[in-house]
Length: 210
Ligand code: TMP
Image 1 (cartoon, rainbow, N blue to C red):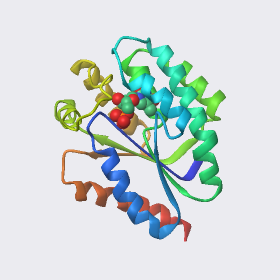
Image 2 (image 1 turned 45 degrees about the vertical axis):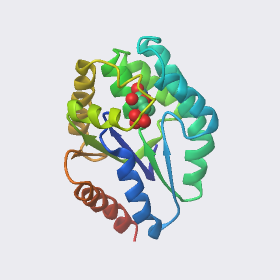
Image 3 (image 1 turned 45 degrees about the horizontal axis):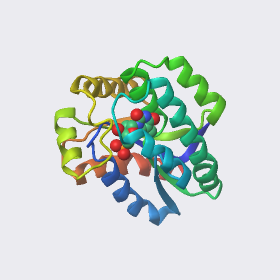
Image 4 (image 1 turned 180 degrees about the vertical axis):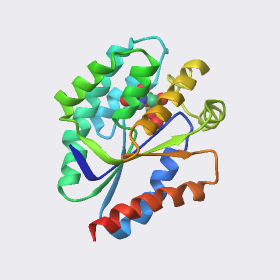
């Protein structure tokens, strides 16, 4: 089910999603209530699952186990935050959502994409953002940015460059396959220019509602 006021941001490590979400939230606030949230996480309980996923040894879990943990966290987040906020007609800006699972666990860790899609349908009833921005960056640049930020959530950062290149390719592929919902943006450019591209897309949605 596609939700008009639900917007997600996707991309590799250090692609600047959280900066862009903050900028967009400020502008959107003139057009209604806005919440910003993230995955994995977004509720106290889902943040506990996040900690398990983003810290520790890179090989501690298989891709399937990660997928199940991610969907447990996602269900909690959807039930407690995303759906109630959408029902109140709020804009929901989410740092990562289901495409991250397709890309990281599916393409990156070889989990059967059919399993992920099945879980998505059964657990989330295919809850889908109406717009997804994919911030594209060369992993060599993105990983440097991400590690510089005194980051302790390094489990995925520590995966090989080959893994991160696969992630980048998969995000680009998804953007190419479905032009309506996805907007691929070069994230290696001025922050304000990126925001202009994002705002231009979002205003189309706002105008469509008038
Ligand atoms: P972040 O770096 O955007 O804060 O996200 C945390 C990490 O979680 C990131 O390295 C990617 C990973 N992740 C997945 O592997 N699958 C998912 O479905 C999600 C939401 C995140």
